[in-house]
Length: 423
Image: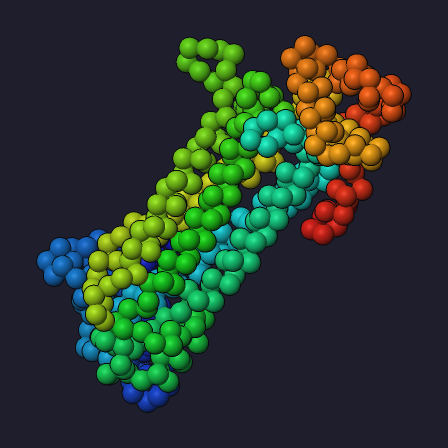
């Protein structure tokens, strides 16, 4: 990913656009074919050469063209004919984004495969579900992975749809009215480059397209953080249900040898904040003066390489974390029964309603019994049976069967089938 955003890579993309424009002009009889052959044979540039010229002229495209002209000679007069800087820069930018998106999509595919595998692995592993951080009802641990996989599937769709709007170029000239080119030439060049055509542009391609791309990256980063935060909570000493990988020689603290900290997931949380910030900057880049200014350019030189490289890094770290996640099913079972069976309160509520109680009366009674069980660390069934009205309706055996903390596995199967997660 980093290699896509080097100076060398950027200049190579610029040159691809210039060559594509030259090739189309040759096809149209506007440039001699032998001139194109000489240009291709002689053209050369290095970032160092370009930077040296730019230090004097303070214009990157002019510096780029000057260096190439020095190598090419008289035929260089055919290069950049009728074009403006942003014709090259914005079209080449789309080429860079295209390659970056391919790598991100590869990472999404890898993550989805790991998540599907781990969802199946823990499909029947009971665990406690938590709302507001508080124990709620039994669920299965595999559902976490299934939900995350479904979220990445949506990101994959978003990125594909976004690319249709982002991967466009333009050769419409200084103010977008084809003063020295024409739409047919533009279409031919974009077809040659594998890009779409911006139907209308000023001197630049409208930046709402680029903002959408960075917003998709920010959404992906936020899902990564969502997973990281969950694992950080699960790794807490009081929970202890899952741990990110920890190397044999790894140390957790300079002071406390016992520490095993979720440093990878904490790193992911921090980096997600960066990418969301870059998405805000991309939105700020949409509003430019008249046919354009270059206030967006300086920001894009930072936010696009950084966002793409950061997200690529985050996805590789998440792959490592999920693939090596140390899951503790026994601790999940222990936590499931930590609250003495009160997680079955809704089942008891429904059972009482089924016996003719009003919802209000049933709720108040079950709530009082649950509070007592938690306060005295007493089995929920024992507290329920102390209530004469409940004891008159249910035997101990019936209540014990009722408060078994088992998830509804038949519906878990249905959820997995919806997601096409099958063994």
